[in-house]
Length: 237
Image (cartoon, rainbow, N blue to C red; front, top):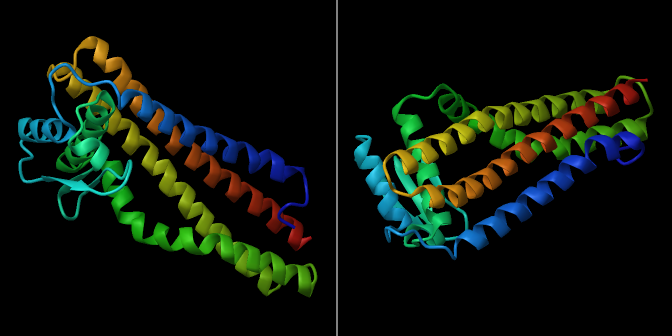
């Protein structure tokens, strides 16, 4: 079964530990640089509006949203939403995050391929995320109680594997989207003089910590896919 051999500790535990570390790193880095204010006295919302205007994207609204690190760009509504700790905050963490979200708005304006691809597959991935694990366990249980070989449990497990593959594809597409948005953010913050050289380093650290969470998510998705493929082969035997 799912926890029954060493492959669980090889393909599942390390990615989960990486994900836990990434989340911890984001929280600690964000907390640290949320206490360091930028010398120009700009808020996250100020920076977002300045970047959007300078790139001719004045049709995108900048709005506050509740929550912590809930910042995101909504390409359908053309709204850049910044969390309460970013919108009116003057910290280096807030500036870095606001610029990163502007990076997504610029990607949308430039018709960045990977962003368009991610938007296209989101509906499928939303279904896959919610159904893959329950289907996989249902397939394993049916196979366990009905005996080995190719039966209904095996086919359910194969469908679940397709769902896990879709989730992995989404995370692999997300990686270049997020890394490119951070690259654009740093270039803009430095190139347009929004932050000075000393302030750029903390902003990079915040964005690098956030990038690690996307790498960890891809690793978890890959681990689940490999693990269930192995279990599928075992159930067939």
